[in-house]
Image (cartoon, rainbow, N blue to C red; front, side, top):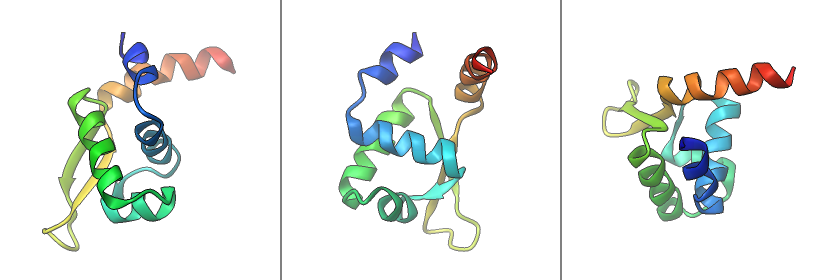
Length: 87
């Protein structure tokens, strides 16, 4: 079910998701720099991913005004079996 919802996401949200998969937790600024997307586009992608429960938002310890984003454990649980079946 969640995989179908991921397929329906806009390309920008899929790119942000892939960057989080590859690099682990990131700030909005680092996601914008890595993806070359506008900060507003990244924010929109993060909102969509968050609404699906795919990512988690936490306080960025070095600067509490910022947030850090990472994949949720629920998303990792969904992806793990898929990854293992390919190897």
